[in-house]
Length: 364
Image (cartoon, rainbow, N blue to C red; front, top):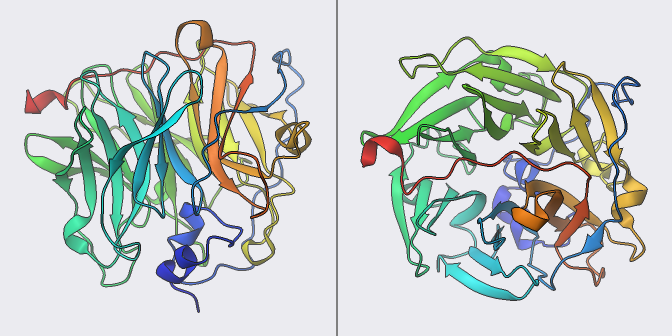
């Protein structure tokens, strides 16, 4: 049995955070069938996948976020550092949380309108650090929304991906319990818990709901374990509606974002058993507004001309002249790979603009 802390002390492990957070090594997970092209929608015009910048983070990256100035923020999960990359790819440290590697792991990010960044943090051996942090424009991190740890094991609570809605509410997925929390003046409050958001009871991979995105009065979340996409309506009074299954067959989905036509672009970690994971089926999927799933960026395309072993976890669209550029961040499966942890690719379709607010609505 291997703990999450042991996993992160071994940066050569060929896994990424959502699998590593589990308190034991994961093997033999049965997965939905691989996605196939839908055959109805025209294939997007995909350019080459090219390295971006020179960031090589120990243990890889988990969350990516981007500002309207096309500054890319990247959460180095093991290092406890948020890096900032200029539009030209120059790298600097934006925030260093400064805790021991066994204590916290950085996960999802969201950029706010005042140039601050919200970060989901797993407090592994420090339950008092668990929750969503706010990093101000100067790079100073503060725990803004503590979240409870329901068990004594590392990974008993997994704050994961973050998203604003267009009214300024901030939400975070909680992957261990199958929940979404809303963050505001009352702190972090449970917004919805549902079986669709949970890992299967028989699965050793007890990471369920993972990525999150907002569009048209709904939150769209994926389930890493079941390979599904779920829509959660936001009711007029702000409460969660009944979650509904939207798409299946996504393999191991991690992050996702919308384009302007309502397609979801989903990073898929692959279909292998975790103990034999080599990333040979990693790809990027596109889910159409009617739930059809197709592979739009293949494993071969991810390798590119540089032979990159990047396992993309988080996709984000750029702004302005980069609005049709998808940035991908993750871990490098081959520790000797000289490529960076971030790549970018022109996809022929602008991304949907992400809502950005100075702070969660009811804190104002």
